[in-house]
Each structure stands twice: as C-alpha cells, then as structure tokens.
Length: 169
Ligand code: ZN
Image 1 (cartoon, rainbow, N blue to C red):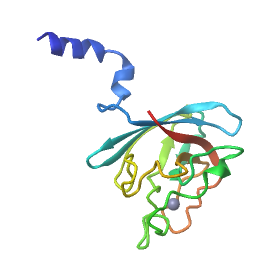
Image 2: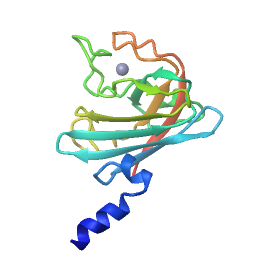
Image 3: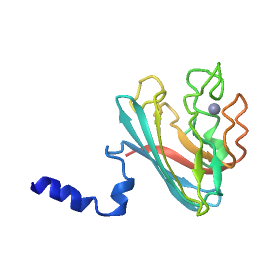
Image 4: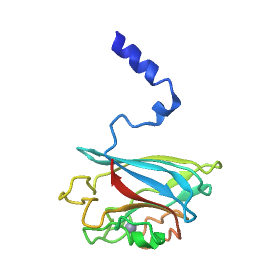
C-alpha cells in the first residue's frame, strides 16, 4: 500500500487540506487598490460548471460581494473590470429576471480578515467558445466588494476592494 501511504504523507501539510482535489485551470491573483496582494482565486472546469476556490486576506470582517466582472482588467482602477459578467443579458441577483452569470454567493471574512470559499458556478465556462466563456475577447476578472451583495435587483455591494484578472493557468 505504498500509494496510499504516500497520499497520507503528502496531505499532512495543512495546505493540502485547503487545496481542491482537482488541478486548477485558471487563476486570478487579487490585489487591493493600493497594490497589496490579497490572495488567490483558482478556477477549475468540471462537467458541472466552474469550481471557483478563493483564499483571500486583508478584508474587513463580514460579508463581501464576490463576482465575476465582464472585462479582464484591474487598471488603471478596478472600474476597468466593468459590470458583472452577463453574456445572457439577465437581471442582477437571485431574482425572477436573474441572474448575471458572474453573480455568486457572498464570501465572509473572519476577524482576521481572511475568507475561504468554494463556489460552483454552472453559468460560466473556461472553454473558449462555450456558453458563458470567461476567456472571451476581453477576458474577465474577479472582484470582491466592500459590502455583501443584496442578491436583489440592485446589488448594493459598494466599492471594489480587491480585483484579479482571470488568467489561464
Ligand atoms: Zn450581478
């Protein structure tokens, strides 16, 4: 049983516990408005959608809107990422007319400012040319907002506190 022994040994590190079992296909490295590194979001294509796995630091404690925005740019400021990724022309939120493909559940930071989240987003794809393709002509970005998303027609999530361009890994 050499193989299983190897697995146990290699997973003794705490990093192994946080890592998804699948290899990531894309990554967004987040930074704050001041350029400070704020963690990493990995994206993995699965048959059921894209598994989005976030490890974020430096947040204010509490809930934060966590979205995919329509343009793969965070410069000169996070406004460059544009609005929510919405190739289907839907309304925002978990509403009758929603949702944007880039709408996702809020993430929550502890008192230490760290947030850890896994989200399965079945409305997007890492395959070029597929419905909801994130690697469209101008790419896509992950944005973390100051406040939690209302999940209603008006997101009310406030300013943009972290941004990362989604890059193929
Ligand atoms: Zn939205």
